[in-house]
Amino acid sequence: MEIKIDDLNGGEVIQLLEEHLADMYATSPPESVHALDVSALKSPEITFYSSWRDDELLGCVAIKALDNTHVELKSMRTSNNARNQGVASKLLSHVIEQAREKGFATISLETGSQEFFKPARSLYEKYDFSYCEPFGDYQEDPHSRFMTRQL
Image 1 (cartoon, one colour):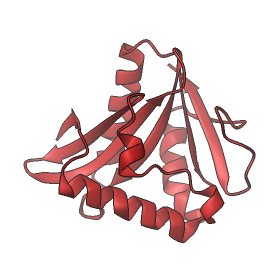
Image 2 (cartoon, rainbow, N blue to C red):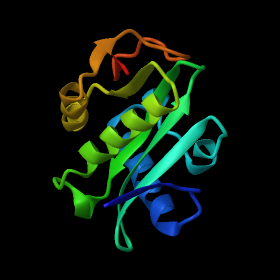
Image 3 (cartoon, rainbow, N blue to C red):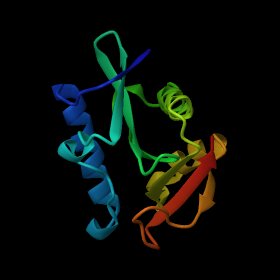
Image 4 (cartoon, one colour):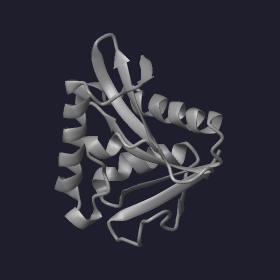
């Protein structure tokens, strides 16, 4: 598996992100969906990564710099045909290491509170993320769970 910085111009990546957004809107009220669309993911404070095996897209993840010490995990998604193959773990390990190498001290995330998001929350717990209060511009929301870890 190769993980690389992605410019978000490939059709496969755009389709995966559209599936991600569709799932978010299908499982959460619109005001509780914090997933970013492709244009927002192209912001300069965001580094977007995609994971590939040969020409097959396996997944994606992004980190967004909130300030000089804190990044947020965004758009973590594994393609349907690559589920249960360790893709999410490898992507998460990769962005944790990238954030550490860039000098960030903290990585945080927002995920859903619904059962649909339980596998994601379990993965983050496995990687030493702990539950926390809302960070950045987030507000308390019964449909959201906030997690963080020190790097």
